[in-house]
Amino acid sequence: MDVQALQEKIEKKSRELGFTGFGIAEAELSADNAHLQDWLAKGQHGQMDYMARHGDMRAIPSLLQPGTVSVISVRMDYGNDDTQAWETLNNPRQAYIARYALGRDYHKTLRQRLKKLAQYIESEIGAFSYRVLVDSAPSLERALARNAGLGWIGKHTCLIDKDNGSWFFLGEIYTDLPLTGTAISTQGHCGTCTRCIDICPTQAIIAPNRLDARRCISYLTIEHQGSIPEEFRSAIGNRIFGCDDCQLICPWNKFAKRHVEPDFMVRHRLDALGLIEAFAWSEAEFLHYTEGSAIRRTGYLNWLRNVAIALGNAEPDTETLAALHNRAEHESPMVREHVQWALHKLQARISD
Image 1 (cartoon, rainbow, N blue to C red):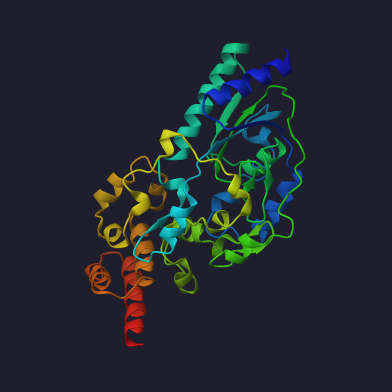
Image 2 (cartoon, rainbow, N blue to C red; image 1 turned 60 degrees about the vertical axis):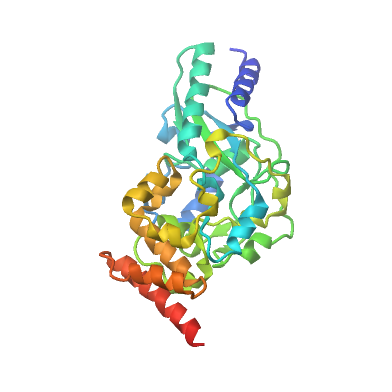
């Protein structure tokens, strides 16, 4: 097998499939595993018990896919208009949804393209052992992408490429092919910058490269089940699904590529969704407007919980108060509790 020629063909095909970055990483992650285990030992993964399962499988790819010796790592851009994002964050009547979730669920898009890439490799060399991953199994994808030369892990824990910023998705193909690593220097280029740390609304980035998920708005509005701690509710603002502040403020994102992938185009005006409209959705409407979307992950009751918090952080006008009162007797105790919190907060502002 001419490994170099094969890799050149694979990279060319990856570009044809819409991937904007490509690299090969060796399947060795012992240093990153030590960081993961320390993070887990400190309980900074919150309720994400799946992060602690499977032992060393995340750091030893061959335990996840037997025979793995190299990993194909790819990137696909999803960047949007930063100006529009800031305008939404500064409008207390609008709902802010993380930019990655405005279009089709990226898991589906990347997985389909990666399967096509694997099938292409099979057409070139015959059957081989592989597994396609897109956030779908225990994997240290950012570490693998870093080792493949796709960027460095920034202080906010996202991967950054100096020529493309950080607005991109990652995917992998675990393979038994003896491919040659493509890593370039993985030295970080954050320097003394602490903008992502400073802007975090809940101070979740507790140190460079150390995120306490229990404080993170993305975790709280998506992964966390049950009541959101009151200490974080005001800081959540109007962010009802995820948070992008650390990426929006990152100076490297002035180089981010604006995507042209149709799958990631905004659906159902989700980038201009009003909080009152979002709160009025029935479960059927929620399922309709989030069909094929990553937003489905949070579930309808958590959606109402999140929007109730955002309404409590909005202006105490007649429409907002009426919307909250309409849900004050909701069948879910969790929803009722967050509605009452929002009403008390708005009433306190009126009294002042």
